[in-house]
Length: 329
Ligand SMILES: [Mn+2]
Image 1 (tube, rainbow, N blue to C red):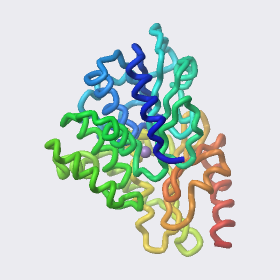
Image 2: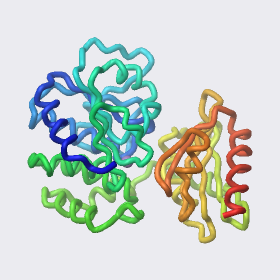
Image 3: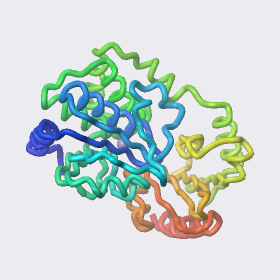
């Protein structure tokens, strides 16, 4: 399914006719889900002049705290009760409703759902689905919606959309970077934002504990099938040792993928509830397809999954299956 203009017109009509609108990101929020949500939040507030509430199911990583309006996010926890009646809810960069985590119990009660995304695996769970798998990011989809509706951006909105595009393309390095993406990014720079400043904030600034945790994970990485498979693990003990959190594991798996012979890089993370989160990155191998066998998903070269088992069992399970597929590949 591609960017559908009829769905965009319906989106515009619905927002104009609504009063209370909720916006949701996905769990473990990244630059794209945060950037696209903030941009749409500002548009609905300033352009459509409607009541709008932003929800995030996890803490916003420190690296994105510089974004305008970031304080407007409401963190959902187990005690969150909503006494407002929302007419419409918009999800951004959320491929499946499971990716909403604790947010789902609020999301499911809101009658009208608008789903804006770029994942090929998107479940089209909304009444309105603006999903473009050819787009680099959900932020690019929002950019396209606003361009089509001829809505004027502001510098703050441009900064949020640029951040989403920048982070989801790995700083314009991944295969989702093309002429169109660069043209749109260039148009966003016209609003007076700085490319180098945003790169500095998103990619070149790290908390000390994040860098030390990364170093430790890489030093302890393991190699299989003549380095075709490279993996590292982070236990709760590792996090404790560096006084770090899950958000500090960002980009470790991309670093592992840099190894010359590496085809698939994996990062296994131990969760509190004896489950294991696995991040996968590849150069040619379709990790989204592989992840789908374990109920996960994502993009061809970047995907994730969760195994409902302790980390050591999860490592054996996933690597057993991956080695089998890669060997025959
Ligand atoms: Mn995205």
